[in-house]
Image (tube, rainbow, N blue to C red; front, side):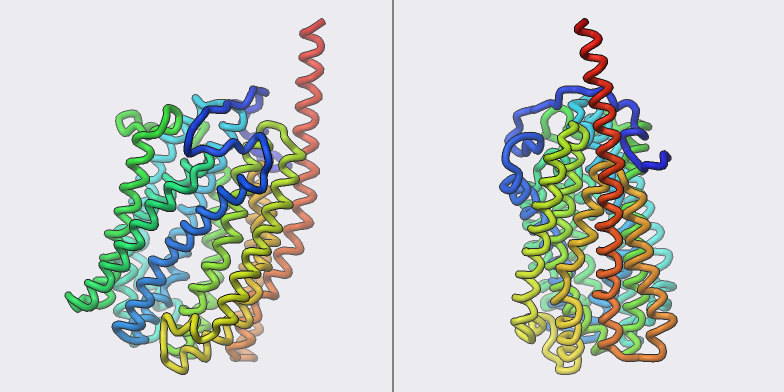
Length: 486
């Protein structure tokens, strides 16, 4: 890896200057030309809604468990959310790598290489699905012991996790397939697929609990079936895509250059997600130490944190994809505009949603539980974490911009140190002397300030280095062109 951490230098097959292809596709967005604001919103809002609907799978599970069963069931379903995030984080990060790899090839006008990347992504999905299923099933017990899951919720939590991971290939197939479509600007159709699956999940959850009295086991099975539906819809889309983006099962193969770029961008992103989730698992263990009410109340509030964060993440993903194409095409001023718009939109959307959820108070939390103890803990988390969720924009959007320019390792290191290691240090060295739930919640905004400030500074460093490389390449290309004319 070069000292500049620049994807362009790691991928010589893409260095040649080419006229970016402008295929006319109904479901694509021309990211290289025209006004940006509308296109970024068109791209990001369906992506945010897709993430929200995806979270609604867990929310629906939590609502049915808490309202139709009991707080123990809610603790079992909601309390394992950080565990699920931990184990799927690496593979979701790889889907980001697939997105960037395809976007850069589009920016360079290399549609032949796009086709190779799509087929490689399909193979990677199958391998990752099998691996996640095996690993998830094997370590469910030890992880639940490690996080101190309340005794009354342990058995149901174990069943929920094992059944969830048994069907994890469906979740990954949807995510990797969506990454392919997202690279060309199609965020609407994956949203429709997920919406259909979410509706099915709600119906099956209620039937499983009220008709078959299947409890948490039935909820988990309903989630797997619903994930299978969303995967099937996205796979069908890819089977009927135009040319370069079409999935061809008979021609599945791994292109080494495409795989290298996916791993180069995706592995650091996935590692960041895993370590980030690991720190949340450590915090979850501390939350669990206050009892089932704290676990249930925190799980209820986390759902609203996820909804708010998804808009931040969506504009971060927009920055990744739009900058991936424009940086590859040498549109540097356009890259700067993308960063500014995405940052402003992420902060504004997060602030708006946080104000709504916190303002509603127990009305929001009451969707998940009506027990006074759980509501008390949930309210504390609302005011100390959810209200300040917009602060995550400072590092998410800038990290997305860096990844779009090919810098993947640096933002990963910043997040691991600022938002992960710092939290773990707090839990082991500071929290024991406090043993206070409110103080525990304060670790979130503290680490957001540290991580965001550092990431913004390093973004400007990465921008300077990356832009200098592009300008040098453009100057050399212009010189060669002038000599050729002579």
